[in-house]
Length: 360
Image (cartoon, rainbow, N blue to C red; front, side, top):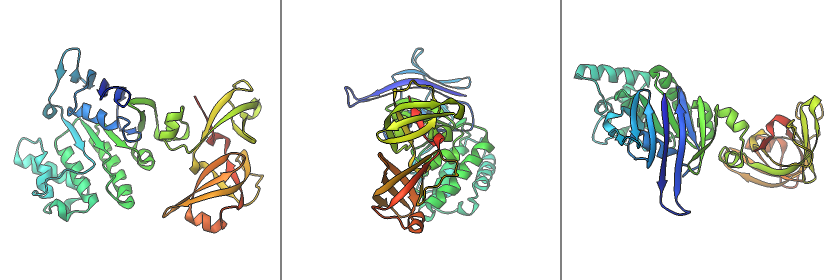
């Protein structure tokens, strides 16, 4: 179990950032999630020993890495921490096998080569052993970086946005492999990302960071589906945030009615007094678009509206639909074609009550 409670200040005055965290990592893959500058990499560097906190304590099981109260600061080389960086940092003049052997902690050459063979088989990269980094694909380079970190026989693995430089197909494969490697190794992994799909695919637990503080933690899907505060909602991609007023309750149905301007929304029952002002959020991916007013459906909210804007990329389209309030809706390009959507078209938005969450 890793316990890290520390503070580190960068700069001074209002532009500076203070990272002040108290985290516990028990097992599996723990994701550090947040926008750039939230403090994610600072946490990894403090654990690895490449950065010294101003104060605090960092310990892995019975091993104390850092303690400002007793002036303990274990050197990097003695911490047995595996670190995988965003840019691989492979030695260009060494083959894949030599890169991994460089990190080996085995006592003999025979033990090292046996360990390397096991790692190459685990990551399905046996064919890369004699090749140099420039001869490898991005995915192969990243697998070599993971193998080299594991060859050091670490007690914890730190991965700092390791898949940001690979394509989507390779990323999907590597996420599964990283999760499998963690299970086989049995050591905790700390994984930094700001990619929602990565967090859900690989994470057992997630910490959301904002301006150097942990604001919420839990299973990734639980946090994404129910952020508890405005900064967390922004960090996890809740595109629709509205200020509304509690109109009334139907406890027997588990429903609270909320007015956002002229738009009435049914949200999960919360017991707040009528007239209370609250902020409600819903992710753009959780809204369904229909050309018809559907009635016999599970969604409690069927909102008539008009398409105001459409912004497209290669695969997805973001709509802005006015329903008395402006909702951002994320759908595929195929859906746009199937529904023949265009600016000015009348549509209905379907939103389940449980997709709407009241923020603290």
